Image 1 (cartoon, rainbow, N blue to C red):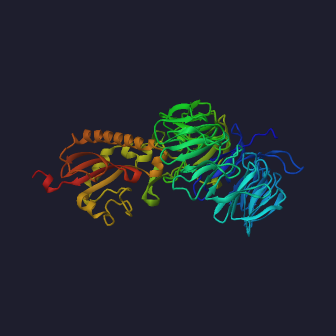
Image 2: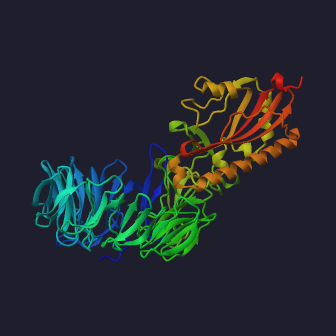
Image 3: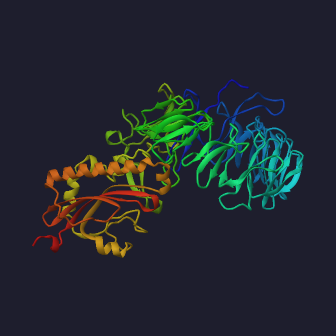
Length: 625
């Protein structure tokens, strides 16, 4: 095996038309390949197939033009990017697609099996799938259906099957018609097809299957190698066996748990238990403020409590939040707090997620300046993606070290903040572990921007114009008081329908809301936050953080306005819009009420917070005359 370590893929974010790019760096951040790749798959330590070549690390990679090839540990193309798709190595061979057909090549880039299959799976890799008898076989799809080929591409089990899986512990699940059964390495059907779903056998001789005749919510159980029931159907769902010989099993009325190959419950069923066990650890309590991890015996192995944590990754670490500190949690229980703002997450409100540790053992974190720092499983900085203004001492950031954002309306009317694209031209730099610059972008590399907040949402994220918070809110109030009165209704994502966010356009508003809440005067939205049910469910701390932040904004701005206009008038015009949680202050200024309102709503598991400032014309019944 080669002594060379595989490089780490690191993401550099550019704006369209360049988009995301990936660079390759070494364990100390030395540049192996500049960010001129779109995607990089898993680096595998491959043993040569045949006599030629020496063992090394190879990964599938996608060039910027969308074509795929393979790169080695030096960052050079082992196979030039001329393929439609490329998959990682397994069992010494890798799958690739060319002209719509799949074939296999070895680690020297030599085609071993010509691309002639409609689809193809991997050969055995010693991971539990493809081990034992059948390890040298792979399921492929031909015109008639699925069959199995050996490493020379010869069909050895013809089938054809409706579907087929890789061998595990000498047996492979195959589908005939709409039912699954199992074959042995000779192609003999040893367990007749009678299951709705079938998963791989463990080395202990058990496999999870679903009985289509069982009652709903109780269809999954365990069978032995002869197809007999070890555990008759009783589970809502089951996973696949882990390296510790356990399988997750969900009871409808009790939650997730883990059982062994004999069907004995090893980790008790309980709500909040993750269905994944990695490094012998399963997360317990996700969705609460007290996350811990249990081991393979069911006992608590890492007590925490953590505010939030991901499942462990095979590298032996995960990303966790303890109190206010984000950091690295290792499988030995050590928590390493980091001074960075938050872990890098996709900026998608519906499907966004924390990246966490990659298969290469790096996790990206976002600094308060908008840089992206990649740390290893010990929390050590390996490299840094830095955005800066050429010749300037500081980063391309806004006031108080916060990244400035513009407000726009995204898909579904959700507020979206993008890094400001104006101002001085920016460059992106990659720095190694020692802080040395190893790469710098040029104009052809695209426009780069600091990473905005996603989890630690601060004033720079919430305020449409940061001057409302860091500047003089009285100036905004005076502008509203002097404006020509117009009919308005606050715009909200939760109840806004197809409205475009214009508070003076009432054409699409609910008639009852217009009748009850439409005001006459001028209004400005100062700050806003929204989270889908999926986002809030994944990061439960966001709700409490947002509520605390908006309460602070409201109290602070109310004090500033009271310093100018005197004590708030309790006989104000009432709420600008009724919500699930509101605070209101009003000041009588001439013929107007100046109204500051904090508004909150929680529709369907989502949350929304708004902060409005309005100058409302005093109605005769409230004028006192």
